[in-house]
Image (tube, rainbow, N blue to C red; front, top):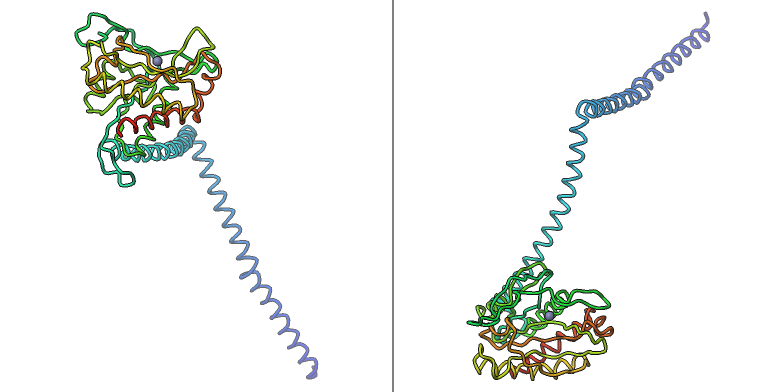
Length: 320
Ligand SMILES: [Zn+2]
């Protein structure tokens, strides 16, 4: 062998060794590792799949139950959130109500120091049990009726009354009045005597009863106010006079706010809710639900707002 041959052999050996070790390194550190990782991943995946399958197979019902539970939990969480939100809002409302209705600590509005009891007439279902129409009276009438309904809208009078009562409540509170609501829901059972007693017990400065009328004459429209007469045997002259004064404040104020037909005063001494009252009280018949135009108007928030504004303005005038 000459030096050249020996050199070439050494070079060849070195090259070969380098190439071999290169491949080997590549395999060990590259592909193999990668393969191993992949394998591991696959293994892990298959393990997961297996375990999932196992869980599914072995505890299918539980799994379903768990899923259902999860869904239920989610739903519950959502509904809890809703409930919580509602509760929070209710709490806020309660707080507002407490602040504005039960205390005089409303800092945004100058308090009037006056308490108004609002009775949204009727309720979803009537109660035909009888009660005396006045203290000591032998004349008895149903405790509470469900009222009339829109001839065209078919909306219950009790709903229109309640929606408008709530609007009046908001307006009065914003003007610094304390407000006591006889009802804030359709599903109550409060007799007319009980309604009067709510106003009496809250030492309200006045009670306003909110109703709509219905008539056989569909052309008849407009509002009027039922007021105790001077010959009412259940009420003091002071209550009768104050009630009449309130009526006289309300009639023009409602006319101005709504543009509706002012049909004036209807003197009535047969109304249980009025006769048991110990505070000035009137019953506003906001309109005729048997008249097409008025029926539709009374069912809209915009007209109810006007009606409520008119009543609030009349109440303001009463205290001036
Ligand atoms: Zn009514």
